[in-house]
Length: 318
Ligand code: SAH
Image (cartoon, rainbow, N blue to C red):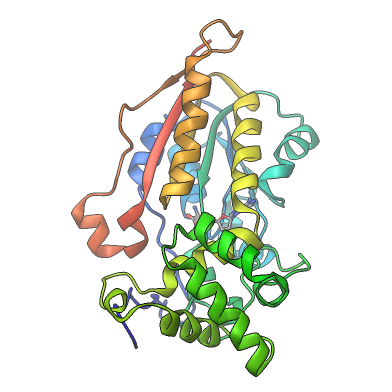
């Protein structure tokens, strides 16, 4: 393996990929989960259901969770795993952009706690078939929702050099975006379409100056992040999701967001700022914490996904 190894995914005894939820105690605290209060929660990134399960346990016997995810496979697995809770748990396939419709479908206008644990799960990342990881040879796919039409390969082979540069710069914050885009276009001309993760990894590796290759972060990290964000329209989704969440919060309700990189965190921070500054608005919001909450060294050593996690939370005061 070239460059720094970012850590290989964990597997359960049966050999399935597993996902460890991050900052669980902190999420329960920020959402103010208590037993016997009969409150409603919306988990917008239900994934493997780690946070949802913790919320259901902390709010027993009458707390209810509606969980959404745009990944059908994740939902199916979680439905099986959380079977004992299904009286208090409803799962639906949906994206953040559909949050309002989902809430309407369940007659939910006042939600007590809303959670976003952004990005991809370790299961998505580690599964070679999903094509998210440069460390795993597989089809260059990256769709969270596999019913969506265009894969990362479709994008990478269709975009012009100028557009590729822009995307890699904007979503990957990559200094060498121009060189990488030019290498992608050269590969397409000389060898045909790029279809595999390992092809893209090696194109990026070769386009990166040798001094960069020795850094802790593998040079392909940022390009893969950029593509993933474009394929899944992640920034638009987050913006729409946060606005919808704000409009659904009950008085005293809490919105908790965990982000994993600077673009996500910036968006969360700015949205929160906008809402906490609207002093004359009919709805009032306050930040629960001055600074984002991060994982302690013990959690980081157990769970590599926790390394970059930042939790921010908002309460609707009036
Ligand atoms: N908290 C979960 C893990 C969440 S990982 C757990 O404890 O298991 C993030 C999940 O959010 C992934 O399953 C991904 O498919 C989903 N996701 C990301 N963006 C989304 C969006 N815009 N709409 C719906 N789900 C999304």
